[in-house]
Length: 131
Image 1 (cartoon, rainbow, N blue to C red):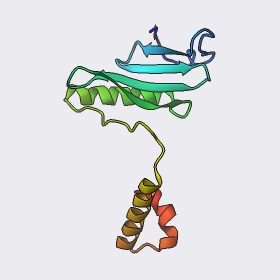
Image 2 (image 1 turned 30 degrees about the horizontal axis):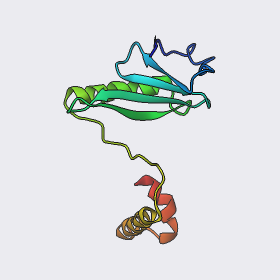
Image 3 (image 1 turned 90 degrees about the vertical axis):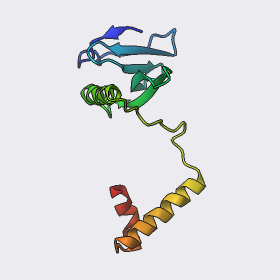
Image 4 (image 1 turned 45 degrees about the vertical axis):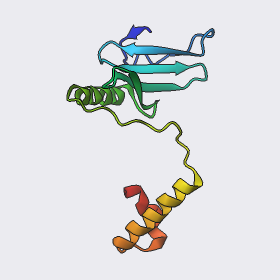
């Protein structure tokens, strides 16, 4: 895995080599910060660490350009500080897609919160983003 200085110039012509499906770059400045570049063009920031059992884990920070390298670096530094105090990142779900049952639980919870706050049910979809 190549160690690179992640800066604006690094991201200008970033591509995955044609003979590989993906390549990972490690930031020289921030321990654990990884940039995964796929042949499809997706660029994903992640944080690599070892959990309390010594197993290597990876926490996805986000995709570039939605998450810039400066924000990804800050998040990796925050995660590293947490690790220094023994606080491990919470496991991320394997799938980002929710089942119908999970959506129903979310819908009911939103309605209950709206009722508790005396919010009209027509605004539940709008106010749900605040929770």
